[in-house]
Structures are given as C-alpha cells and as structure tokens.
Amino acid sequence: MSDGHDHGHEEHSHDDSHGHDSHSEGGGHGGQASQLTAEQLKNMSPEEIRALQKQNCIFCHIISGRVASKKVYEDETVIAILDINPLNPGHVLLMPREHYQIMPQIPDETIERVFAIAKNLSHAVLRALQVKGTNIFVANGAAAGQRAPHFMVHIIPRKEGDNVKIFSLPKQSINPADEKLIYNRLKERINKAFGITEKQDTKSHSPEAEEYHHPEESHNPPENEESHTSSNHEEPTHDLNKITSRFTPQKKDKDDDIDLDKIAEMLG
Amino acid sequence: MTEAPCEICTIARGGGRAKVLYNDGKVVAFLSEKPAVPGHIIVAPSEHFTIFEQVSEQTLAHCTKVTNRISTSVFEALQAQGTNIIINNGVPAGQEFGHFTLSILPRKQNDGLNFLWPQKTMSEEELSTVELHLKEYSTTMHAHAEEHAPPKEQKKLKQIDKKDDLRVRHYMNRGA
Ligand SMILES: [Zn+2]
Ligand SMILES: [Zn+2]
Image (spheres, rainbow over the protein chains, first blue to last red):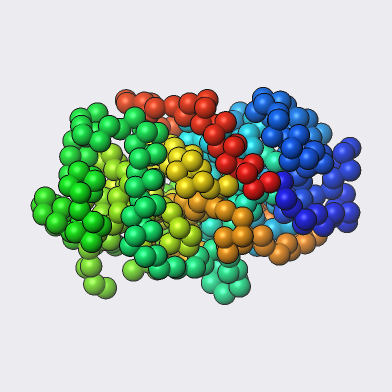
C-alpha cells in the first residue's frame, strides 16, 4: 500500500502492544504488511495475504479487545468505533468483525448487515450530534485512498459551513465516444456479474424490469436513446414532501428529536 | 415548491436519457452525466426515498448487494485499481438529487481525486464526550435492527465467484 501518511500519534495512549497508537484509518496502518515488497505480495495467494494482514491488522486487535478503542456500537457481525483523528467530530468507523481488506471479498449477508448498521449509525449521528447530514465513505484499494488494511465504512457527520470539501465531487464532461466505450465495457461486465443474457434478461426479474431497454439491442448511438422512452407510460410526477412524509413519521422513536423530514426537505 | 418530477424516479422507470447499466425493477444503476471520474456510476433504489435514513431495510439490502456486485465489475471492465462507494446524505453533505443515491467511483492512481483528508486531533475528553452522546442513541440500535431484519430475498443474486476476488486483486496490485 502506498501510503506515506504515517503521522504516528504518540500522544494517544491506546494500549497497543504493536506500537501503533492510532486507529484512525488515516493513521497509516498499512501495518507490517506494507513492509513487504509489491513483488512479494503479488506472489502470495489471497488466503496467505488475508492471514498475514489479520495478524498485523490494528483493527483486528481492536476487535479482539487487545487494543483499546471508543466503541460506539457492536454486535455479533460488526463493530463501530470513533476515529481518533476524525474528519469531523463524531467520525465513526464501522467494520465487520471478520477481516476483509476490500468490499468485493465480503459475502452478501455480511455487507448487507454492514450497510444496515451504517444507516442506523448515520441516524444515531444525526440525532446525537444534531447535524444535518452525513457522508458514508468506503475506499477499496490504495488508489482509492484506503489507508487501513481492514475494510471499513466511514460515517462522517456534516454541518453547513464545516469546510469539508472532499465530498463535493468534481463534475467532468465526457465526450460521447469515450462514454459509449465505457458504457459498453461496463454493461458487458455487469451483465456477466448478474448472469444477465442480453436477449431475455427481463424474464428472471421482477415485472417492472420489462420497462427497461438495453441500448445495445437497437444499435443506436447514445444520442438516440430518447427513442426508447416512448414505452414509459407512467407520469413520474412526484411531490417530494408527500412522498418522504410517508416513510418517516410512523417509524419515529419517542426520543427522536432530529427531524428527518426537515433534512429531506432541504433537498427541495 | 415546484412539483418537478424526480430525475431518478424517471430514470428508474426507463425514462430520460441516462445510460442505464442495470435495472431490475428495484434498483437502477446508470452512468453519471457529470462524472467525477470516468465510469462514475450512480446506484439508486427505484422507490423514492430522499435520505439514507428513510430507505427501507429490504431495499437497502438489495441496493448494497447490487452496489457491491457492480463495484466489483468495475475493476475488470475499466482496469480500475480501486473503487470508492460514497453516499452524500443531506444537503450539508453535498447531496445533489432529491432521491437517495450511492456513487461508485472507479479509481486509478493519479486520477485527480483525493480523499486523503487532514486529520483533526481530538483529546481524550473530547472523544469521550462524543462517545457518550453517540452511545445514547446507538445502544438501542441492536434490538431495533434485529426486529427489522430484512426478510430473505426470494431470488438470490448470483454470488460473487471466487475468481472475481483474484481478478480484483490483480487490477488493484497493478498500481502498487
Ligand atoms: Zn483486520
Ligand atoms: Zn425519486
């Protein structure tokens, strides 16, 4: 893992027998695994890599209780701790107890559970810290900014004017030819991943899927895709307020003092 | 407030000009019109939910599965070395659509994006205060989550096969 951000937070007195004091993902915990050369890593099997990483993973030690942390939630599948070097106060790191490096390795049931808990934690953050938003952030791979060897979901409290810029994503324009190429490559691989065959892909899906048309079926350039919309009979007229209000009030706990409707309404 | 149709709902129903990559009637995935990086994919439930907290358990479970499957596909399809999964939840967090979405960003080294943030240092007392506040709300979550555990999906999606893991590792390590 190319990292170079090991700040070494000696001021924190976590009981860490491995000499790492910080359990912030930004703390440079490539762990001892990062001392191996890329060449050595490449020649290891995924199982060997996983075993090595687990052994050297600060977060596995936190999960096992060998390293102290500020746990805000735990159950049989996941654990959530405070990042001691947060982007904003209340920055939560949520991770499966099992050591996985990246999301593609995680079984469906586990990742579903992780995101279900992320939602609940996000809600807890809104209520506890009286903030009006959260960023949920996952980095898979060093190129994506992953700095911890253990897969985790960041839950970051956000306030108006908190000066956090990194989630305001740049908006690039892309030329139609490049977009078409990217689209085709993705579509092919995604179809494969879901076991979708181009011709009769709708038959294994819910009835609504029949409204979906593959642009490839009629070899039109992307510009002509509007022609496919003619089958869209339903008028998508949505009153956001009406619709969002359907989902919130009945689920509200008595101590739920943050108004999700208000947060939702800010979006128009 | 105007009653403009929801852009994402429109796309989920097959309307608009979005480049739809996946649509099973419950979840739709399409290319962002203004990508942060090439291949920026937006995943959304077909049902209209505004913010993360409002998404039903079952819908979120399905969204998560589809997101993981698609983000895994991105490595091989676009030779990505990494992926980011991002939810901007609420206006202060940079949410742009009035409909809950997840973004999948295929990443390469030196692609111009940077999610390495400056780290604030918090004192033990500050951390403990936040911990206490949060625990007040998070300790009741367990029972709640169990209660509302999503029923098992009727139709299981294809599992990520073992080879995908190897393939992903191959693309990730290319930049190392
Ligand atoms: Zn670990
Ligand atoms: Zn909508």
